[in-house]
Length: 69
Image 1: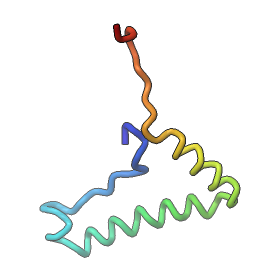
Image 2 (image 1 turned 90 degrees about the vertical axis):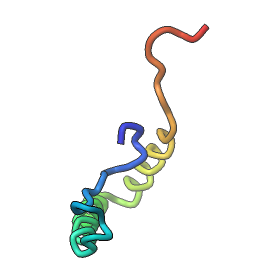
Image 3 (image 1 turned 180 degrees about the vertical axis):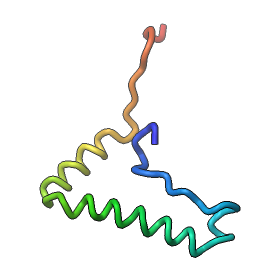
């Protein structure tokens, strides 16, 4: 999340998704619906611009403090 690689971390059920598949599927479905609802409010051009900016930022970082010697 800090590096802007992921949009969201989806909570796993206690003990892991393999122990409660139904809850894992429900949590994933809620997240997908929320993100799809957001995308449906955008025009294709807005989605394209958003994705372009997102991929341009991937792997980018900012150095703070003094310059290396």
